[in-house]
Image 1: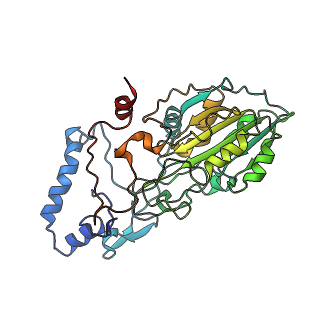
Image 2: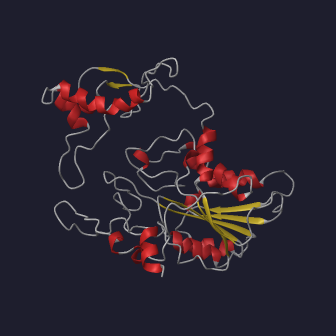
Image 3: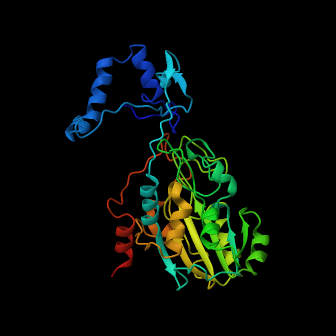
Amino acid sequence: MLMPGNILTEDGGYTLFGANLTSAVMNSTIPVERLNEMATRIVAAWYQLGQDDKSKFPEYKPNFSSWTQKEEDFIYHGAGEGDRGVVNKYVDVQSDHWKVARQIAVEGTVLVKNEGILPLKRGAFKGKNIGIYGEDAGSEDQKGYPNFCMDRGCNKGSLGSGWGSGAVEFPHFHTPLSALKTAFNISTDDIPKFTAITNNQYISFIGKSAKSQHLCFAFINSDAGEGYIKDPVTGVHGDRMDLYAQKGGDELVKSVAETCEDTIVVVHAVGPVILERWIDIPGIQAVLLAHLPGQESGKALVEILFGDTNPSGKLPYTIGKSLEDYGPGAEVIYHPNAPTPQQTFNEGLEIDYRYFDKVCLP
């Protein structure tokens, strides 16, 4: 019934929740009655919605642990001691849930630029050269190992979600790379010739390769999460420090689009990404903000690219030309302004589009 918490907080203090709360109850520092009161407040909504009515909601008992993937472990894992038992039964309840996951991925994708190249036509690229560039396109390894890091706490491969205590394990992950190859290979006769470079450091090779392609895809991303994890790949510790693509993404897009006349850019990101460094390059014919698509990433993208589904998503934020465009309230606190960093939010409701309306409209 309790949200998992961190023993050590970001500002160096200690929390009374998470494992500390479990231990405190077990050693009687906190009365069980107090714990029951806290739990009652949480389950009140459960009763309010009538979910105790077994004629409508079948009896449910947890069969998994949010703390460990082991089959057997501590019953009260947060305490790190006490009785052991089966905590994970590995019950597969997926059924056809992938349909909902894909629908969410499709509807969360926003088409922000299209110079007429989309939708693509199946069969129109037989015998053509197609280039797929960027680590964010994914790799064949990612199909077998969809969860690279604990709580998704690293920007590696194609970005499907941010990181933190709300992160989940992908049972599978359809990468854009594998989904695109499948979508274009509709027959064995005269199929397209694919070139895939999924290492962002090979900028010079990517630029040379893009020259000989009839159609190019450039995949970039920007990741973030909770402060209890520091991404070992990008060095991001919780919040992003800027609004640009990570891992040299902007240079990758420019390298592709400056030599490939028909380039489609796909951005996976946790929020706004500044596009100003390359959005006006003539070779960029389409830009899709695919956000955090989850396990159905590649297959959802293919549905949109080929017009199987209308990309009806709308931006939940404003994209400025620079961080400064968002106003003083959006400034990054690069150094602590107090023992516990403080933000007073003097801007009130004038954030995002409200701020832009205030300063841009007459």
